[in-house]
Image (cartoon, rainbow, N blue to C red; front, side):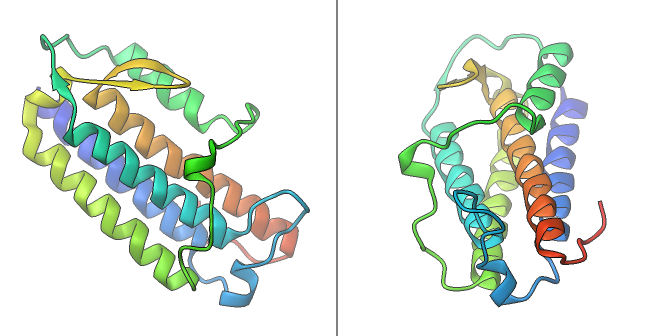
Length: 177
């Protein structure tokens, strides 16, 4: 399963790159503007993704071991597609809603990147054991560790798309992707 582990790490790194590209190059002022009432600003999106990343990593670090199930590529692909689908609106639970934790977009992106680095290090350190970690997600149900890592990568991608939508609404030229 070393190949799968490498793919998981690459998936995490690719989504980090996409997320940073979406949020990069926007001014601090624009980052704090909500394009529509009731919608998040870019800064709030980055804060939310950082909070979720930290919480999910904490779940993985404390996850119990189960018998190692075989990697299910179809289920993993389905999870990745579901989490990134912006047509399916999801309300963030209160504990992961932005609360003004970061004073700037630069600080928020640093927080996200630090959390993602810890996630990547965790994934690399787990090796094949990542598939035997048991976790639960309120929306996706029981998951193994690899599936939760795929959701984490997809979550960053989902909000990269949201950031691009905010940028378009504000008339800010979005970064590539």
